[in-house]
Length: 173
Length: 195
Image 1 (spheres, rainbow over the protein chains, first blue to last red):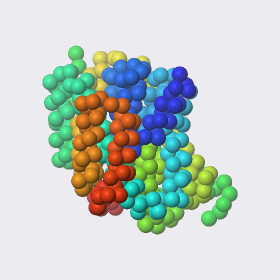
Image 2: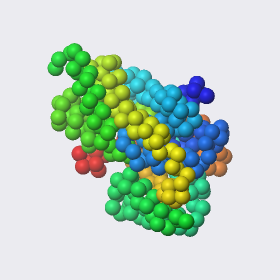
Image 3: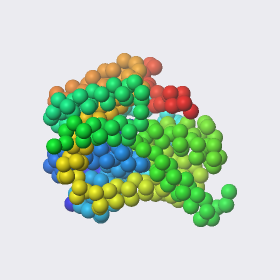
Image 4: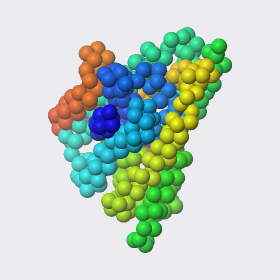
């Protein structure tokens, strides 16, 4: 399990162009959809906590998922796995970035990667929406949060906390 | 600057602070990193800092970890990069570990179940908004529209593996990128962030 976790998060770290949000659909696919390691509702709890705690979302997601699946050692190998590709690739880029940046083929490659990530995040919103929208009240909370985000652009952690608070008020009991 | 353990410790401490005080990760970290690295420590000038952010966003993985690695390396080579990564990751790691150890058992109480159900709605709203923000930055030029469309069809309709979709779009972009002009999306408009 530990080796599996390490390799899974190594792979996720290697392909998550665009940071933490790009990781959500990748983790979802490996951990929830294909391996059934976690239920979708458990994964949603992890995302919620990752958004509300300090630090990079990617590290929060990896640590929590690792802990849920294999305790302390699981969280350790997942976090190392997810940071290792960053470390290696950035060290290579420190020497080559200025040359790489101006190359039209590489520019095209980056456009391709960013486009894929955009599509991935949209698909994560769709698939998580399918699980989360079990109740019209949750849909109402989501709409209110979305309008607030576009209008006032508050901090993500605040929006999540307000959504959770609304959940307690509307859904408890 | 002294080249003993003091430099590494300072890099570690600086990124530890950055790790503690940034919620929501990624882009929200940029102003704080700028204040610590450019204004307080003078480790980089603004131009080098912009390069650090550009590398941080172009490389795969967490933007904060990438930027930390880049800055750490520029200041004190490999050990500097290691100290920066350790600093920026440790607060997250310890916080999540504490929550998982002490609070996980309460996750199934009615109160927290209701909280998580409501928060899930907020998460969907947040992902939709992030799609908007990233879409505005990414969708510039024909190539990005075509590739995003292709990726959506592959993901939602053909249900291909996400990594396969990333690879296909990367290869298509690399192949087509040399042929079309003005097709590159800008990584980040720093003016939008008030920097």
